[in-house]
Length: 101
Image (cartoon, rainbow, N blue to C red; front, side, top):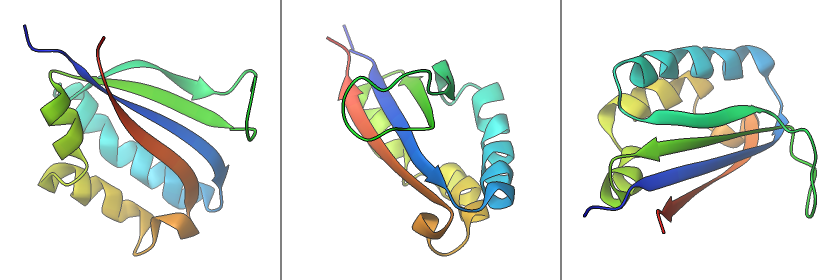
């Protein structure tokens, strides 16, 4: 059985809301065509430990390999380009990859 892979994304700060929205819109068709499934996402309701995050999302992929490789995929890189040359100038975030237990 192939285990699923997951992205866990946590956003600490959005420095340019307009560009972040363009990125969010650019990823919508990737979700719609089934590149990944959004398990949950939205504003953070409570931070139990660590730095206060403002937004988070969990994305599910069919395998760990897909989750590991998706960031560098042509389609995701095209969507990511909506953030400009330096992602950190638009959004401060962590994206981590995990494997299903």
